[in-house]
Image (cartoon, rainbow over all chains, first blue to last red; front, side, top):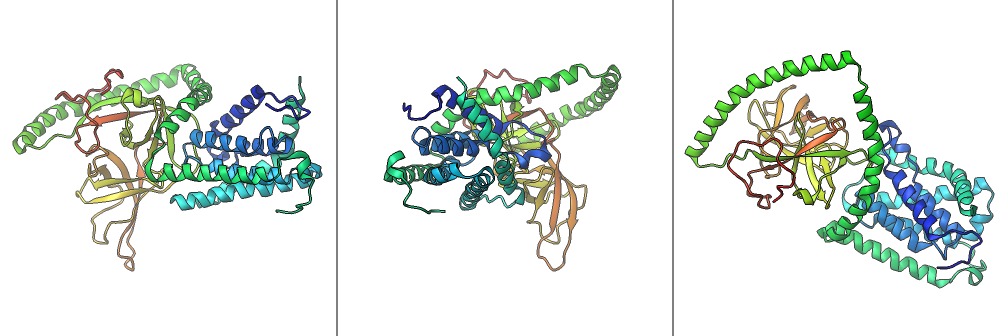
Length: 161
Length: 304
């Protein structure tokens, strides 16, 4: 366990946040709202990457993705792969992204989430069950719009004693 | 997006290790996907994740179900009375039908015995509750609260009171995933009840719509025809209602008809489904079967 960060993000909090985001992913929603469900797991992974890639970087992204695959009952490993890829980009550009003003930061998050969704779309196609419904892309702008909120909430949760 | 190699990397990150980790993790994920997609080798991992996930899924589902139950218990008296009258009349009709059914079944059994063919009637059923969680919204799948411990197996048929519902795609220890007949990856062999013409009904991904793309132009099929399962393929018991034809388009330029049908089962409404065991040599992994008329509610413990 590393304590290189200023926040006191213990493993308990990490597990709590992870379980909450997974739960939010399968929480029953009314059918018309379903395409607008934000991608909470991806947002959490990106947030952890920007906070502390040493503590919760690619390994965390991979495990969270695997859990998500098992939860949603899709091909095992697909979210693990896509989340690891966007986590890599986020970790690599971490210092720049953190220095961006909020709007620009959301734009970068939007691009990363789009990359995530695109990779999923691609994998679905290779595995032989492509989902061509255009509404699958709606989650990307919705999630990116939520970024400032998620950022604020997580930061508050992290800095609490 | 890959820019600025001059960032102060050594100060904060383990530099090249990041890229190495990406490659290792991505390779592991790709390996998992191939193993899962090709051979379903990962049943153990799947089962472990499903078992870990089940309490969370159950906890999410419970409040919604409790809310439904509460609304039910506060239903107005008049509604309950009206429902009661309707149920009583339904019951009368069904009993009348059953009177005929008993003698028909006896007759059928005798005839089958004469021809020495097996009856393939449903032998045993198990009620499974549908958990109120959203799996992938673009696939028609549901999660139920019965699993391999209750004898549920992959490929088992699920029906509800009105018709064929789907089949089990994954049986975890305590929960199972059911693919609905409207899922785009699902196909069910059916028969037009009126004429006996056989075909395959494909799911479309939209609830309430099946398509039958393989019927030749000269097939006798009209709107309102009942489609029943033909029993070919051995997954579904034969003769159960699956769908009703809603549109038939005869385009002379095309070699085949474009037929659409609406499933009869309440795919997005019912709170529970019946998992069925029937006499079938193809998929069945040997449950004990007495020669008895279809039992309605067997003890769940009587697993094979």
